Every structure is written in C-alpha cells, then in structure tokens.
Image 1 (cartoon, rainbow, N blue to C red):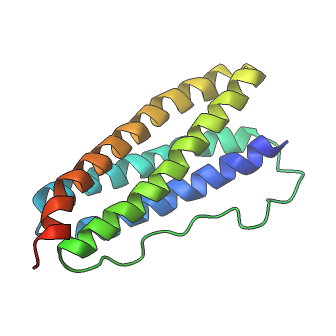
Image 2 (image 1 turned 120 degrees about the horizontal axis):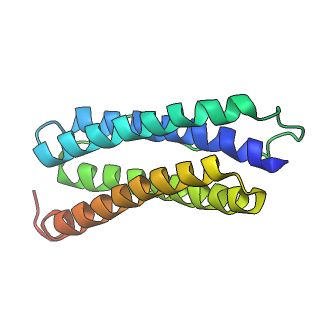
Length: 152
C-alpha cells in the first residue's frame, strides 16, 4: 500500500517546510509580519509532523520501495533584500503547495479506507496549510510591485 509511503513523505515534507519557515523567519527578521507569521507557520508544520507520528506507528511498514525522487528540497538559507524575500516566499509557496496536495491525496485515500481519524487529521491540517498558502500568496502580491518595479 502506497499510503504508508505517502504518509512518510508528508511527515518528512512537513518537517522540511517547518525548517524552511524558520530559515525565512530568522533571515527576514526586519520584516516583522514575515518574521512572526513564518515562525507561527513553522510551529504549525512541526505540529503537523508530530500528529502524523501516531498514524505512522499504527501502520505496517511500507512493502514497496518509495518512488525515486520522492523528497522535497527545502529553503536552506534566506536571501537578502526585497527581491530575496520575494524569492524566499515563492520557494515556501511551492513547498507549501506540495504539502497541500499531499494532504488532499491522503484525505482521498483515507476516505476510501474509511479511516475516520485520518480523515479528521487531513481536514484539520489541510485547512491550516491552505491558510498558509493564502497568506504567502497575499504577501507576494503585496511585495511584487515595490520589489519588481522600484529599484532598491
């Protein structure tokens, strides 16, 4: 069953996303909204990964090997300046989208398996991930005109 493989993938990707949010939070400390919001998102992602641990503990080990390249690259360093912030937010947006669709895929499988606990988990944390996407999209739109048109 590939569900276990995808649960492990989601767990690892949530941890990667949490680290990325922390990196951006620390690297863009001067932008208060970015610093505090990404720090909060990092805590959410850590909680998501922790919540998956009991689910993984009750699952049998994956019988199939994980597909090649089933891992996500994170944000390992923050870029400088307004253009750097915009790129960092884009990187977080891409990774958050990956997490979001993975929650959706797992919710579909949980529904088919009639796993009420997993369905509840995917709904709750899927909604938080969607809120992260909404904020990232809004923040990039707000930063784009100043960053892309006005020379700094």
